[in-house]
Length: 160
Picture 1 (tube, helix red, strand yellow):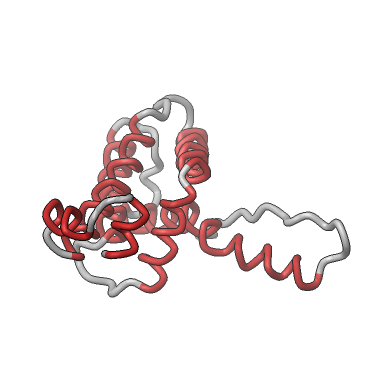
Picture 2 (cartoon, rainbow, N blue to C red):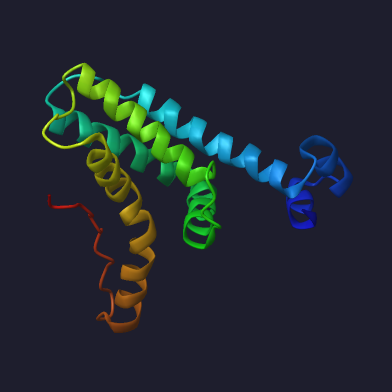
């Protein structure tokens, strides 16, 4: 909490007063992240085929994450090293994705050929796969690539 207070240029006491505990602060950050995802998805046009709708939504999430590198770093730490507790940021993002999937299915903008669970997993992997694996790809190119070789942009999907 000291590092957070220092980064925000406030006292530790102010952070503790406002959020109570480290868990309270984590809850506030998780809520901010989930709300940002929800707002991003709400702002995405709901037209076209299911495939077009999914592409637009994935692109909107990618753009939002690119504009918020601090959130990307937070998600990497939280999802890859987190405790995996019910109600954590992953659980909340999965719930949001499943709710969105059900709504899209109801309006004909998502396929009903697969289960909501499978569609949710596919969406999460598409949206977060690059987030987690791109640094690995970049490191490999940095270590093995030819001089001036650029980092390939990673795309992630699931074949079902």
